[in-house]
Length: 157
Image (cartoon, rainbow, N blue to C red; front, side, top):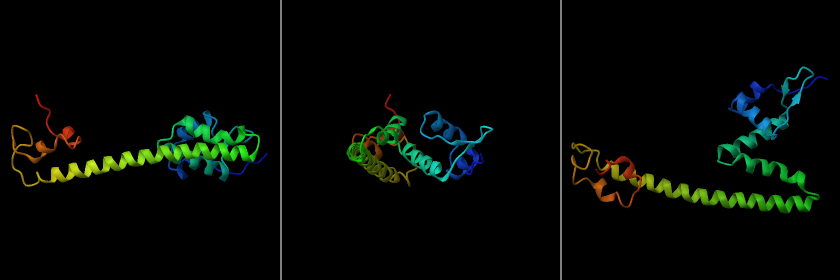
């Protein structure tokens, strides 16, 4: 039997991932490549699209269990209606999780920009960047409201 497709290295290169990552998803039963009589893995376009979706979810923080749940739910349903309802609910839950994560990231972004703005005030300062070296530094006055500054400023002894 002649199998048409791509070898695992070609797929890894095409998807900017590693062969090991692809094998991991195979071990997790998320992807089942075709095999030649000699055992060589071959990936069709459908496999590559599936791997691309898996990689996108994984790169954006989705757990392997969540990816597995999404990939298997349709096959566990008896009707299209059941599949539609259950998948819609699962995907809506993931959208809600993403919305919460986006909100947290936006807050972190704002905090980083605030910290950057305060730190910029030190641009022309010739003092040593520490509490003893610069006791009137604006950073000190912002430590309680911008948590990130507590990471970059000296720790009180």
